Amino acid sequence: MASFTQMLKAREPTLLDREDGHWYQTKFDKIYPSISTILSATAPEHKKNGLQSWKENEPAHEYITKQAQDIGTQSHKMIEDYLGNKLAMEEFDLLPIAHFNNLKPFLDNISDVTSIEQRMYSDKLQVAGTSDLIAEYNGELSIIDYKTKRKPQIDEYMYEYYLQTTCYAHMFEEVTGQKINQVVILVSSEKNTRQEFIKTCDEYVGPMMERVEKYYLNNLQ
Image (spheres, rainbow, N blue to C red):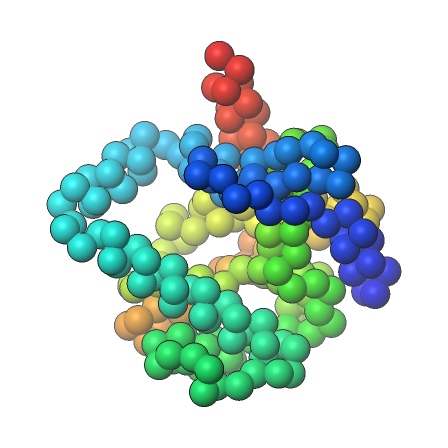
Protein backbone atom coordinates (compact mmCIF):
# COMPACT_ATOMS: atom_id res chain seq x y z
CA MET A 1 0.00 0.00 0.00
CA ALA A 2 3.00 2.33 0.46
CA SER A 3 3.28 2.88 -3.30
CA PHE A 4 -0.38 3.93 -3.52
CA THR A 5 0.18 6.37 -0.65
CA GLN A 6 3.19 7.89 -2.40
CA MET A 7 1.32 8.19 -5.69
CA LEU A 8 -1.57 9.98 -4.02
CA LYS A 9 0.65 12.37 -2.07
CA ALA A 10 2.71 13.21 -5.16
CA ARG A 11 -0.28 14.74 -6.94
CA GLU A 12 -2.28 15.99 -3.97
CA PRO A 13 -4.16 19.21 -4.84
CA THR A 14 -4.45 22.31 -2.65
CA LEU A 15 -7.80 23.22 -1.04
CA LEU A 16 -8.76 26.79 -1.96
CA ASP A 17 -10.46 29.25 0.39
CA ARG A 18 -13.58 30.29 -1.54
CA GLU A 19 -17.11 31.28 -0.57
CA ASP A 20 -18.80 29.34 -3.38
CA GLY A 21 -18.04 25.86 -2.07
CA HIS A 22 -14.91 23.74 -1.86
CA TRP A 23 -12.50 24.06 -4.80
CA TYR A 24 -9.08 22.55 -5.37
CA GLN A 25 -6.04 23.59 -7.38
CA THR A 26 -3.80 20.91 -8.88
CA LYS A 27 -0.03 21.18 -9.21
CA PHE A 28 -0.67 21.90 -12.89
CA ASP A 29 -2.80 24.94 -11.92
CA LYS A 30 -6.10 23.40 -12.94
CA ILE A 31 -8.96 24.37 -10.62
CA TYR A 32 -11.80 21.91 -9.97
CA PRO A 33 -14.92 22.02 -7.78
CA SER A 34 -15.30 19.38 -5.08
CA ILE A 35 -17.71 16.52 -5.63
CA SER A 36 -19.68 17.75 -2.61
CA THR A 37 -20.07 21.17 -4.26
CA ILE A 38 -21.25 19.49 -7.46
CA LEU A 39 -23.73 17.23 -5.67
CA SER A 40 -25.12 20.14 -3.68
CA ALA A 41 -25.60 22.23 -6.82
CA THR A 42 -27.31 19.39 -8.70
CA ALA A 43 -29.44 18.02 -5.84
CA PRO A 44 -33.09 17.26 -6.64
CA GLU A 45 -35.36 20.26 -6.12
CA HIS A 46 -37.32 18.62 -3.28
CA LYS A 47 -34.08 18.24 -1.31
CA LYS A 48 -33.06 21.83 -1.92
CA ASN A 49 -36.55 23.03 -0.98
CA GLY A 50 -36.56 20.85 2.15
CA LEU A 51 -33.31 22.36 3.37
CA GLN A 52 -34.52 25.90 2.65
CA SER A 53 -37.80 25.24 4.45
CA TRP A 54 -35.94 23.92 7.51
CA LYS A 55 -33.78 27.08 7.64
CA GLU A 56 -36.85 29.30 7.37
CA ASN A 57 -38.70 27.47 10.14
CA GLU A 58 -35.79 26.82 12.53
CA PRO A 59 -34.65 30.06 14.24
CA ALA A 60 -31.53 28.34 15.58
CA HIS A 61 -30.50 26.80 12.26
CA GLU A 62 -27.14 28.58 12.16
CA TYR A 63 -26.24 27.40 15.68
CA ILE A 64 -27.41 23.83 14.97
CA THR A 65 -25.41 23.72 11.73
CA LYS A 66 -22.26 25.09 13.36
CA GLN A 67 -22.59 22.69 16.31
CA ALA A 68 -23.03 19.72 13.95
CA GLN A 69 -19.96 20.77 11.97
CA ASP A 70 -17.87 21.06 15.15
CA ILE A 71 -19.02 17.65 16.41
CA GLY A 72 -18.25 16.12 13.02
CA THR A 73 -14.80 17.72 12.88
CA GLN A 74 -13.87 16.51 16.35
CA SER A 75 -15.20 13.01 15.69
CA HIS A 76 -13.21 12.76 12.47
CA LYS A 77 -10.07 13.92 14.26
CA MET A 78 -10.57 11.30 16.99
CA ILE A 79 -10.89 8.52 14.41
CA GLU A 80 -7.86 9.83 12.54
CA ASP A 81 -5.80 9.90 15.75
CA TYR A 82 -7.05 6.45 16.76
CA LEU A 83 -6.01 4.94 13.44
CA GLY A 84 -2.64 6.66 13.84
CA ASN A 85 -2.23 5.30 17.39
CA LYS A 86 -2.01 8.79 18.89
CA LEU A 87 -5.47 9.39 20.37
CA ALA A 88 -5.64 11.61 23.49
CA MET A 89 -9.27 11.55 24.70
CA GLU A 90 -8.86 14.57 27.00
CA GLU A 91 -8.53 16.85 23.97
CA PHE A 92 -12.14 16.32 22.89
CA ASP A 93 -15.67 17.19 24.02
CA LEU A 94 -18.10 14.64 25.45
CA LEU A 95 -20.42 14.24 22.45
CA PRO A 96 -17.62 13.54 19.91
CA ILE A 97 -16.17 11.05 22.42
CA ALA A 98 -19.57 9.35 22.62
CA HIS A 99 -19.74 9.14 18.81
CA PHE A 100 -16.22 7.71 18.66
CA ASN A 101 -16.97 5.05 21.28
CA ASN A 102 -20.18 4.22 19.45
CA LEU A 103 -18.34 3.64 16.15
CA LYS A 104 -15.37 1.81 17.64
CA PRO A 105 -16.70 -1.74 16.94
CA PHE A 106 -16.85 -0.78 13.24
CA LEU A 107 -13.41 0.85 13.35
CA ASP A 108 -11.95 -2.47 14.43
CA ASN A 109 -12.92 -3.83 10.98
CA ILE A 110 -10.40 -1.43 9.40
CA SER A 111 -6.91 -2.58 8.45
CA ASP A 112 -4.05 -1.77 6.06
CA VAL A 113 -4.65 1.98 5.92
CA THR A 114 -3.56 3.55 2.62
CA SER A 115 -4.46 7.16 3.33
CA ILE A 116 -6.36 9.36 5.80
CA GLU A 117 -8.02 12.66 4.78
CA GLN A 118 -6.68 12.25 1.26
CA ARG A 119 -7.15 15.10 -1.21
CA MET A 120 -7.57 13.81 -4.78
CA TYR A 121 -8.85 14.89 -8.18
CA SER A 122 -9.87 13.55 -11.57
CA ASP A 123 -8.79 15.27 -14.78
CA LYS A 124 -11.27 13.15 -16.71
CA LEU A 125 -14.25 14.30 -14.64
CA GLN A 126 -12.79 17.72 -13.69
CA VAL A 127 -13.68 17.19 -10.05
CA ALA A 128 -11.80 16.96 -6.75
CA GLY A 129 -12.43 16.11 -3.11
CA THR A 130 -11.12 14.74 0.17
CA SER A 131 -11.85 11.18 1.23
CA ASP A 132 -12.04 10.39 4.96
CA LEU A 133 -10.21 7.10 4.68
CA ILE A 134 -8.85 4.64 2.12
CA ALA A 135 -8.19 1.28 3.75
CA GLU A 136 -9.31 -2.32 3.88
CA TYR A 137 -12.68 -2.93 5.50
CA ASN A 138 -13.36 -6.55 6.35
CA GLY A 139 -10.39 -7.38 4.13
CA GLU A 140 -11.47 -5.43 1.01
CA LEU A 141 -9.91 -2.18 -0.17
CA SER A 142 -12.57 0.48 0.35
CA ILE A 143 -13.42 4.15 0.43
CA ILE A 144 -14.62 4.69 4.01
CA ASP A 145 -16.59 7.68 5.26
CA TYR A 146 -17.90 8.42 8.75
CA LYS A 147 -20.91 10.54 9.65
CA THR A 148 -22.33 11.88 12.90
CA LYS A 149 -26.09 12.48 12.85
CA ARG A 150 -28.79 13.55 15.26
CA LYS A 151 -31.04 10.60 14.33
CA PRO A 152 -30.62 7.10 12.83
CA GLN A 153 -30.46 7.07 9.03
CA ILE A 154 -32.13 5.01 6.32
CA ASP A 155 -30.58 3.84 3.07
CA GLU A 156 -32.37 6.51 1.03
CA TYR A 157 -30.69 9.27 3.06
CA MET A 158 -27.26 7.88 2.21
CA TYR A 159 -27.63 8.13 -1.57
CA GLU A 160 -25.64 11.34 -2.01
CA TYR A 161 -22.83 9.85 0.10
CA TYR A 162 -22.75 6.78 -2.15
CA LEU A 163 -22.25 9.05 -5.16
CA GLN A 164 -19.59 11.06 -3.33
CA THR A 165 -17.54 8.06 -2.21
CA THR A 166 -17.90 6.40 -5.61
CA CYS A 167 -16.34 9.54 -7.09
CA TYR A 168 -13.42 9.20 -4.67
CA ALA A 169 -12.96 5.62 -5.85
CA HIS A 170 -12.85 6.89 -9.44
CA MET A 171 -10.20 9.48 -8.51
CA PHE A 172 -8.15 6.81 -6.73
CA GLU A 173 -8.23 4.51 -9.75
CA GLU A 174 -7.26 7.34 -12.10
CA VAL A 175 -4.13 7.98 -10.00
CA THR A 176 -3.10 4.43 -9.08
CA GLY A 177 -4.67 2.14 -11.68
CA GLN A 178 -6.17 0.14 -8.81
CA LYS A 179 -9.96 -0.29 -8.86
CA ILE A 180 -11.89 0.12 -5.61
CA ASN A 181 -15.40 -1.30 -5.77
CA GLN A 182 -16.50 -1.05 -2.14
CA VAL A 183 -17.67 2.06 -0.31
CA VAL A 184 -18.48 2.06 3.39
CA ILE A 185 -20.43 4.71 5.30
CA LEU A 186 -20.27 4.43 9.10
CA VAL A 187 -22.91 6.44 10.96
CA SER A 188 -23.25 7.29 14.64
CA SER A 189 -26.36 9.09 15.90
CA GLU A 190 -27.13 10.99 19.08
CA LYS A 191 -29.78 8.31 19.74
CA ASN A 192 -26.84 5.96 20.46
CA THR A 193 -27.32 3.96 17.27
CA ARG A 194 -24.51 2.91 14.95
CA GLN A 195 -25.05 1.88 11.36
CA GLU A 196 -22.91 0.40 8.63
CA PHE A 197 -23.83 0.98 4.98
CA ILE A 198 -21.76 -1.02 2.47
CA LYS A 199 -22.23 -0.65 -1.29
CA THR A 200 -20.46 -1.52 -4.53
CA CYS A 201 -19.34 1.39 -6.69
CA ASP A 202 -20.60 -0.21 -9.89
CA GLU A 203 -24.16 0.67 -8.82
CA TYR A 204 -23.38 4.39 -8.59
CA VAL A 205 -20.79 5.19 -11.28
CA GLY A 206 -23.44 6.06 -13.88
CA PRO A 207 -25.56 8.32 -11.63
CA MET A 208 -22.42 10.02 -10.28
CA MET A 209 -21.15 10.82 -13.77
CA GLU A 210 -24.60 12.12 -14.78
CA ARG A 211 -24.55 14.58 -11.88
CA VAL A 212 -21.05 15.82 -12.80
CA GLU A 213 -22.16 16.25 -16.43
CA LYS A 214 -25.31 18.08 -15.30
CA TYR A 215 -23.23 20.47 -13.21
CA TYR A 216 -20.98 21.42 -16.10
CA LEU A 217 -23.86 21.71 -18.55
CA ASN A 218 -25.69 24.05 -16.15
CA ASN A 219 -22.60 26.18 -15.65
CA LEU A 220 -21.93 26.53 -19.37
CA GLN A 221 -25.32 28.06 -19.99
